[in-house]
View (cartoon, helix red, strand yellow):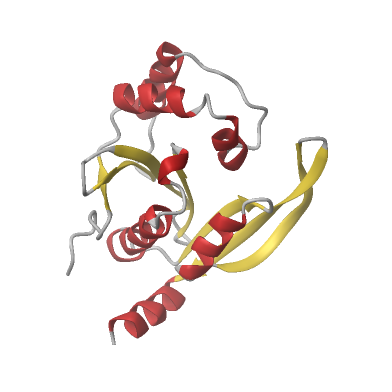
Length: 189
């Protein structure tokens, strides 16, 4: 079996609150990054606030939540983060979320590979049955990326977001273990 943490372009790394806090406070200065990754109104947290937030988050971390930093293989640069939150152990269901910080790293295949690696981790290591995510309707690049790794549209919260003076839907997408296995077998044959 392949390394569950490493792909062709990126690898997962331990979630270091200090490193992630510094990176996130830099990424958060880009309102487009915040628009794509957060339903709340944009804010500009300080590095110190962000580090404290991440430290507290990790201290209270449930074993059901898996946080990862994401680094490029080419230069070992931190480019994003991933979280898998198993919210229902009995049903083996989890939510997943990812973000890529700097625009120069958008549209380069990193997000697709990050999600592909996370699905391999979720279905083979954590032994999940379903992985679900949410995405905003104004993010077609992310939607295409999720579809590429096998996510299917499952629903929407209509007019959930208020951004730029307009209401937007939040979409729900999901993938089942057997769908992922089928797609993986097709790719490998």
